[in-house]
Image (tube, rainbow, N blue to C red):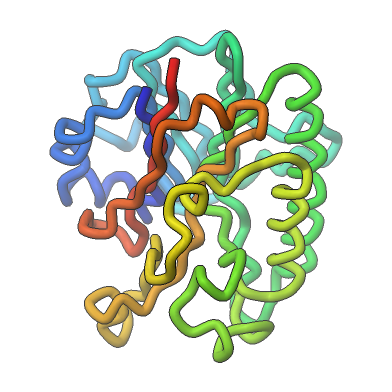
Length: 253
């Protein structure tokens, strides 16, 4: 079973930049999308390779949003954190329940320039961790998406210049990510690829992608309970169309 996740930075734009061709080539069983920036009725291309389509669009037009396209029908689907503060208005999460695991597609809030949303981000991380722990009590989970954090110095090209100076590499955000791992989750890509130089996001400025001055902020985190089913983890840095590239895992059935 192949699962792929991609922050497309606008689904209407990425459809014109080769999304269908990428899907046809890689043939994922489930495709998780972040930053759709659209409602489903605004998208002409229906991605007919997938029978089941689920959208969680932001209330604010052209902002955030998530979607999941699946060949496999889930048992249930939910669109919030299942708590009093469910953060629904920005369309940041979709959870698909399958027979023996949950799949959580998430677009974690960016802390913003000047860290204007860092306090909100800290609250989000706490609520999200509680949510994942609540799922784990029922069955193991896979978390994928744009987590908007480089976990270690290996996960960005210029760590010293960005530490506690740039959103995505503050100690607050790093600690939030570490708490996920401490709760029993594995960074699937690092299980197979321990070396430096692998990134999933590059700024559009200064030729960053051509120079591979990037950040690895897109992940598949998998429950320890599913570790025996993990059959590879990969990044597609050659796939263009967004400032992020797709990431994926193989899962043994």
